[in-house]
Each structure stands twice: as C-alpha cells, then as structure tokens.
Image 1 (cartoon, helix red, strand yellow):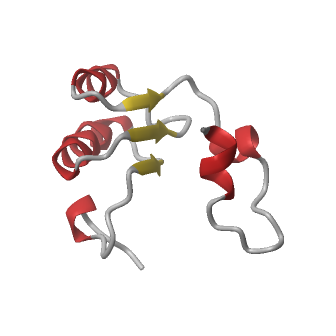
Image 2 (tube, helix red, strand yellow):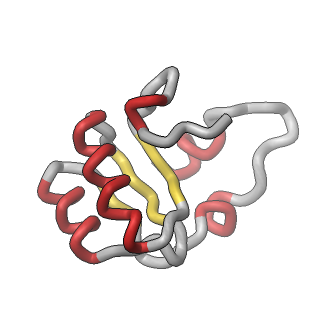
Length: 90
C-alpha cells in the first residue's frame, strides 16, 4: 500500500525508516514530529541537515550517517519475526 503522509498510516509506529529525495525529507520530518515518532532512520541519499536538526530539537533519535538499514541489521529473518529489526537496533 502507499500512504502519502504519516498521518494516513493505519497504525502509527514509534520508528520510521525512509528513502526520499532530500528536498522531500524536511516534510517527512515535519510529519514525523506531528505524529510523535521517537526514532528516524534516513536511508542513504535522504539526508537533509535542516531536517535532521529539526528532528533532534523535537527529541527524535536520528540516524542519518549514511548507513543503510539492510546493511546494518542484515536480511529479514526467515521465521517471520517482524520485530527483528527493532530488537537488533535497540
């Protein structure tokens, strides 16, 4: 499914990983702040300094150092454990 805004998600999570052009990232962060997200992972290429700073000022834990989530946590588990990524990062 495609959700144009974070507020459109059926369930708002505490964490968000995304890949957007940098010119879109600031709007994603604005929406994330409004939705009360706690953690943001900007995938390589999505980084925007102003967006990162806005998120940090709002108290969001931001990963924006160019690391790819898939490379950092590895492939999804075979057993269908959907919380695998969250446990490995935390």
